[in-house]
Image 1 (tube, rainbow, N blue to C red):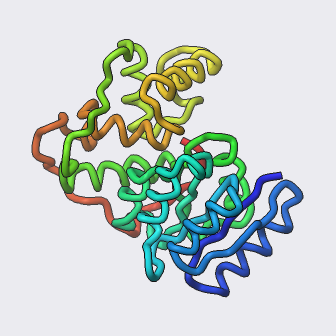
Image 2 (cartoon, one colour):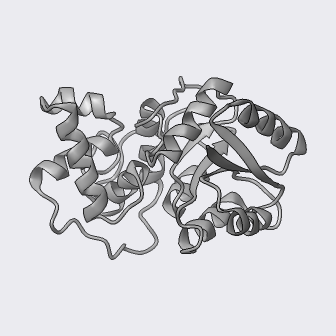
Length: 243
């Protein structure tokens, strides 16, 4: 049974998500939070498997709440799934850096939301490949990280760097296998080794590592060079799924 904490400042949405989650025989809602501070406190109390986290909430926003939940050893096992209104929400990149395991749009069909909860609970990152390519490029081109991360790619093999680069470009495991002409099992082994070597929770965090260590930059240019392209527009097609 997947235990879910729902954090959203709108009671109607919380209630709708609760009904949806509780109707699934494999999920149950353990608590509801109307603010980020409540989400942090309830996560510590109930230790849910997944937190459905809104970004814009009073007292403490979803990014700070995510950061605190993921940084606290007592709740580090909780997976945070960000729910956002726009696929280019300026807060999503910050939420992923804070430790979120992925994001979904609030207008995601119910079946896909439930599937997303199961994917995140299983330890996978949930980044829609078509959205990932635009979203991460957009925020990677806006500004460099405020400070360099201590994490490096020492010990990562050439093949693993190649896999990490393609993950950052939004390829799924199936697409990786086809592109690299490897078996799916081999690809999963490479991904697992990257998670261990880079000490990250899931592939959503691998995407962040790839950009913040300078392994890759926005599409169409080399890392460190100015971006020639314009930002993606909100009206472009969306997608949902596991990256």
